[in-house]
Length: 144
Image (cartoon, rainbow, N blue to C red; front, side, top):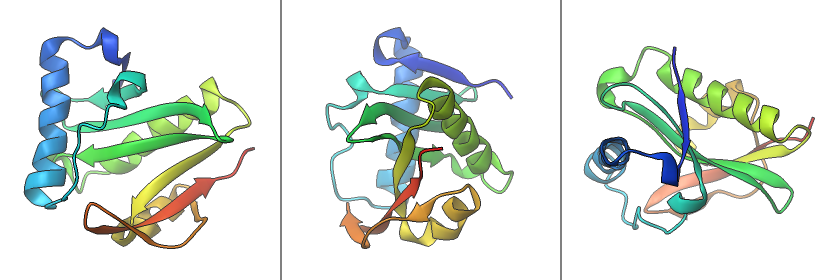
């Protein structure tokens, strides 16, 4: 599988549109998230994605407060059930561990996906919280 990793400035207009469209389709139309997607953080993120059109995507942030962060993890409905979510997260985890060895990785995981993330090595590291009307857990892979 070929993954594309780009900074915001490296995106083509078409790639940027496809990534944002996927986020809109899943988070807002499917899951009915009730918060803004455009949070002014995309410009600082590393974007990991695959597919043409894009059907797997996440954004990655370098270390801050002792950990790097993976977020906006999304897989299109037609790509689910094929282990694409795990492949995406493994690629993101690998990227973090290669770029920032010895640094913890944190996510805000939708609560119903807790076991999915535990299978990838994450553990709950705090209380459940609400984000955009959806329950989430903070989860962490400790620094190696």
